[in-house]
Length: 464
Image 1 (spheres, one colour):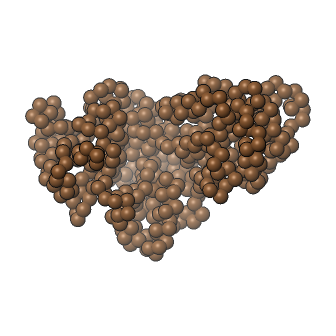
Image 2 (cartoon, helix red, strand yellow):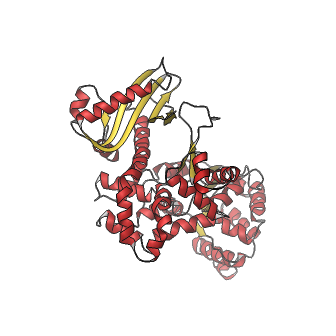
């Protein structure tokens, strides 16, 4: 199943049309869909896909030679495999002199583990030969830390790439395509559990209830249960302390002081570990949308719902899973789930507003969007256009609201907006809720509200 990634395919195709050599770097966390993207690209345009393994250099060269021999119908190469990376890159250079040649090397970091000087060899061949031909070379990797080192200033490959792409999870509206039979409300719950990683989405079956899918998840042999540990241990050298920090954040401890108090770790240690988690895109730091980037009012959030759910419910209760008590854990989750989904729905609402912003279906086009808080007061989302001095204030509620409740929320939002300090700005107010009774009547009265019914139109690519 290949869903979305239209932007990524388009960017690759735009570069493919150029006559010059291209050196594209694609990376991102495991399971995110990098291989599916590259195979789809090759399916459409032809080329060679080479998957590195964590094995010896000689074995990888032998396998790559077999692939090249098959692609070019080269009987000599089939009988005489390439013996060095110099020979490998020379072969690619000769084959790309006249015709466009797409070559994808997936899991490139495995090759570097086998030969530390490989980046230097590639740099030399790119500078002297490959860049003169018509090769379209893509290197890809799942170790985010290693791939970013390969792109860094100290790497021999620094400055050689012609493009790079860090693949992210699918957004809410694209991910819904995996579950045509679930209602949108059901899928909000699924998204809160799995996020937008394709491999995780494939683990749920929309012919089962969410509780039935969770029962499969909460098993000791479950892929969903074990994969968080696998990914984090691959990226992090001291996972125990990182896990403590991520668990604290997932439980709602979002300020530095709260995380320090919850974990018992030194303040400087927490700061260092948070920096690593942010670099790996596992945690993000937010400041009030009106604040300077130097603000000390930072809050920390787990970036991906899969990890947020895992650290909030799964990791602290792994003993229930290991002892076959998955049903007890489902009861525990469901008793708290709506509290957790409040955060998830805010993230989905943010994606909804970004989509409307792209379509120019808001009162103005915002250039900044984020939360706001100050001295105990909070506003879920504010969109700003600083040049035009316009602000959009949005309250988000994972609740079913009556007409009266919706009016009250919007009136309270208008009152809170005065605390933000945008006196000379043009302001507008919106409410996003799970469901709003009498929505059309409210709109006729001038109250601007959206609910899941409006989200359905985004999925259907209709205008609101």
